[in-house]
Each structure stands twice: as structure tokens, then as C-alpha cells.
Length: 295
Ligand code: G1P
Image (tube, rainbow, N blue to C red; front, top):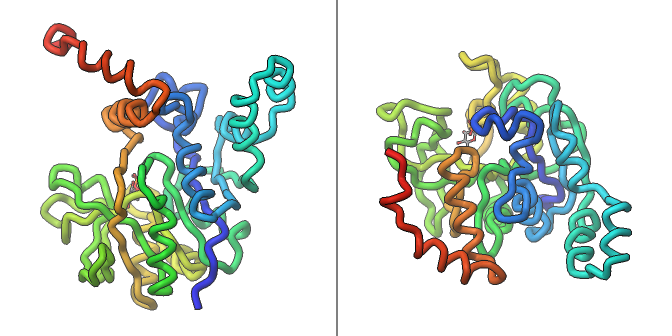
């Protein structure tokens, strides 16, 4: 019998250099898609998937994330006194529904290292890893789709997506056998292969369901040539001992970790918001793109 998934690990220690200067004094995870920080989309997805224990693997300069998910008495009192009940409910929702735990990564030694740092807080149970940069609009929520696959197959599940050849070397890539229904059994996986070395067009995206034996596998995974411990390489070790699965999520993913992806996500989520969709659409349609574009 598969164990229930109760905990989700969010690695958030990255420096956000792609978004400098805005990330000099604030975490990239707090950049908003309309009015909600990127990280909150991932946290809400976890909660909507029945996973309400959130473990944030943080680093220096990330205090704004902790404050965001904490109770803010001053703000609540202020909103209450002004009769702003809708906003108050929205603010309370964030701090009420979830248990947060924080652990510091210390040094930026890669995704595999970030997962290892969460070991004591995760304990001996299966858990999720959510990379907040990947914001996925899906119904049912992406993580709950994966939990279903995990329950059926009783093994680790990685989210994958078909990626065009020119972008494949930014990802972990799997070699896999289709089992039907968007599910695959993984035969091999390789971190950031060159375009010619990529075993398929199926790239790992930012959702994982992992079993606690990943920790032992990561313990014996050395640093790669960039000095980082890669989760993909840890999973490769694990593959010698157990079956691993992949699943193509039914939904729309945005990679908000780069400028273009971030901008696309802002437009997408603005158009999904009933309160601003209509005037925003009107604005977009009125733009004279040829006149604006700087060449
Ligand atoms: C990480 C993983 C990679 C995965 C990607 C998904 O890379 O190492 O295997 O495909 O996340 O976003 P990063 O984006 O942190 O370089």
C-alpha cells in the first residue's frame, strides 16, 4: 500500500540572478503574477491536492517568503478596522490553511542537495517536491494528478512534458516506455543532455513524488562538474534498485524562471482573472505592436 503524501518540499534558496536587479533585495519567488506571488501558486496547488505541510528550503535574503506565509496582526487589524472583509479573508486564508517549516540550505549546492537538507523534516515517508518556478494551471491540480498515479503504481513519479529540441538541454530528460494514459516507466534519465544526447523529447518539469529511499541514493551521489548534487543523478542511482515512473500532466505549465516565461504567465493569469480580464483584453487588442517594438 502506498503511503499518503502529507509533505511538500519547496526549494527556494536560489539567488534569482536571471531577474536582477529586481531580485537584489527580494526573492524571485515573491514576484507577482498579477497580485499573487509565484510561490503562492505552488503552495495553493499543494493544499488543493491535500498536502498541507509545506517545507521551504530557504537561504539568505528569503525572509519575505516566511513573512508572507506568517500571520500579520497589524495588517489584519488594519483591514478589519476599515471593513475590508474580502481582503482580510484572502490574507487569513494564506496563514490558516497550512503548516510551514523552514530549513536553510546554507550553500547553493543544487536541487539534490536541497532535497537532502529537508531529510529530517520529511522523515521516513513519501513526499512531494515542487519547483515553484513552474506554475501549472490544471484541473484537477497538477500535484493531485501525480498523487493519483503514485497511488496506482506505488513508486516515485516525475512530471514530464514534451519540449522542443532547442530547449531540451535546459532539463533533465528521460528515456521511457509508455504505459498509457500519459504514464511512462523510466528506463534512464540524464540531467541537461546536449541536444544530440537527449534520449527523448520528454523533459522533467518541476513536480516530483519521491519515496524516502531517495535520501540514501542522494547520499551516494557525487557532485557534478558544476559542483552541484543533481536530483536527476540521485534518481538514476535509485533506478538501479526500484521502478520509477513519469507522468505528463494535463494542464498548462508556465516556466516563470526566465523573463519571457514570466511575462507570458502574467498575461495568461491576468486573462484568467474575472475582475480584470475584460479591460486587460481590450488593452492588449488596442496595442500597436509594430510601433512599440524596439528594434
Ligand atoms: C531542475 C532539474 C532538472 C529539471 C528542471 C525542471 O533544473 O535539475 O532536471 O528538468 O529543474 O524545471 P533547474 O531548472 O533548477 O536548472
